[in-house]
Image 1 (cartoon, chains in turn blue, cyan):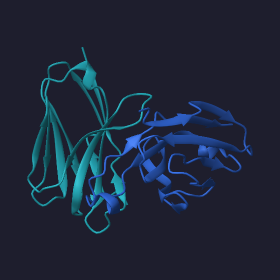
Image 2 (image 1 turned 180 degrees about the vertical axis):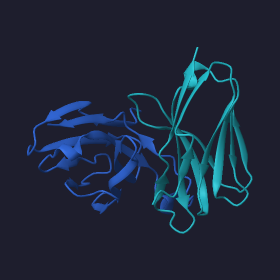
Image 3 (image 1 turned 45 degrees about the vertical axis):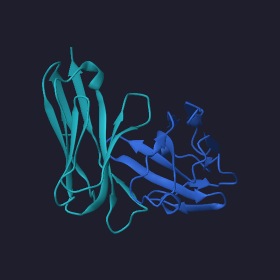
Image 4 (image 1 turned 90 degrees about the vertical axis):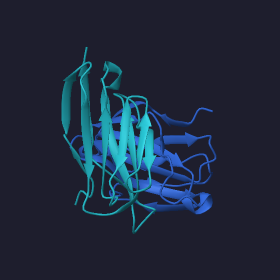
Length: 119
Length: 112
């Protein structure tokens, strides 16, 4: 299994450009999420999904869109990039507690991250 | 409001030393997890603790969940350069198991 994969690994954008960060997992996980990681701020949840066709906002959703058309894929779209979106972005997946019956103990599997610089 | 406080924020030690990092909260958690993140990689789960007072060992790493399930500690015995990384605690709040709350992390450097 490849686990959680993310592309690209690095990206430089100009202010106002749009792009999509790709995330895929091959573990048949229901739950997928996007985080950004900034110095001094820790991991902050952007958007998450509990299954295909279902998405919801996290802690810092502004400027980002997501969709979940399949169980495997969970792309993150930046509609109009801003310097404040310079960050390292991580996609994560896990089983969903409602299905496992083990609420609160799900292991989060992270991708290797995408390093984004917005000029 | 940061519900999980990690300390220290930074730690630099020599190979062979022992260390303890802490993860504290005023809230009760149904479980706490510890992850390690190496430079350029995503976090990887080390352990999950779910019972108050629980102690788990992973080779030279010892994890403890507080009796009241409000805090946890990670103790490393005889640290090695391979232990270098960012140690993150994360917990599911007892009132909302769908939301995983993250600490800011402890950055550990072990010098040979």
